[in-house]
Length: 407
Length: 76
Image (tube, each protein chain N blue to C red):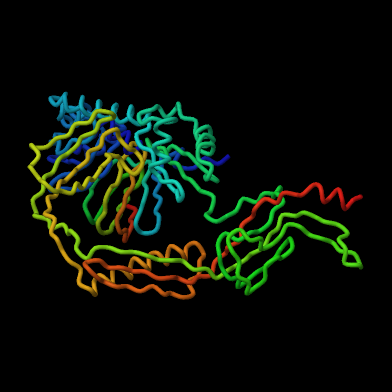
């Protein structure tokens, strides 16, 4: 018999002693009463047996003149008997179990992962507003349909997977990589023109006729690679004209003008150490804020921490609470020293340069100077950079000259 | 067909695994049980199993299981 089955039926530990306890055991054997964990103890034996055979022991005891004692009782029947007066406790256990089961039928949390261009909140809001509300039955949610809707709503999403784990809807997203161009086989006939003024330093032509050359100064809008290809005959006369989508890389040296300034005086928060805490309890859509009357703070920060109750990792419950803390501070006027101001200006310039570098702009020369005058720190100057300046502009094919040449 | 003596005569069956486990079938009664000795009678024979930390793990209507460090077995 399995241990669980034995526990469910209940079993007892018996101590038998007196005259010939071995005879007592032999009679148990003859009556086919199964016992286990038998061990000698004091003047007799300790053993365990099923609860249902206990009444049979009386006859054996009388026959052998032994004495028996029940030392311990184990199993469900004894446990129920012990707690028979705690009906409400048992009822509470059953109700809690039922509540947990009922809650497990609904979605109580939406988790979005893998965003880059969009934000998790943006996608989560769209799902909650349009497709899946918190508290919706899991059986009503069609993950394939939801994936399709998200792909339509957010064109930058290249792959999306929705999955229900526990009471949580998990949405995993992969977006089109930044800088990846969508290859369009029907690229229109185009020229490559300059997006800004500069001096060309590198040029690679993949298709079309190069118009500009390395070292040449170009202005915004100048054609760099033409989409028109002339084919000449032996007499240097145009035999044929083809129109193609010009393609190539044109890198030019350009100049960025940088200007930044900030006041040397600024306010810093000096926290007084006085704070006040409030707790907000949320049960599905019911929200209740619990706090003492708010203290009269003139300036304060609010720090909120939201805790969703869950069982395990994915079994979210429809209960959450938010602890919000108001921290009082006094704004104190502080002035940067010249060194501090310059360090801050350099830090801001470096951030600007880092942003340019992310756009594949290579900084070649830095002519920015930083000066602090009249309570203001100025950073101004030029940055000489190398960057791609070519972009495609649609080419309109002239119709009349073509007719003339064919005649 | 040969019928074994445990069926025809109710002979005692003793099965020992190594020195730590033994099973007894067709026994009649337990005569003595301590940490050092377990004495069991069958129809025609008495078996004494000597050892240390001897325990009867279960004692059923058909068989019993003995565990401990068995050192000697005697037939009387």
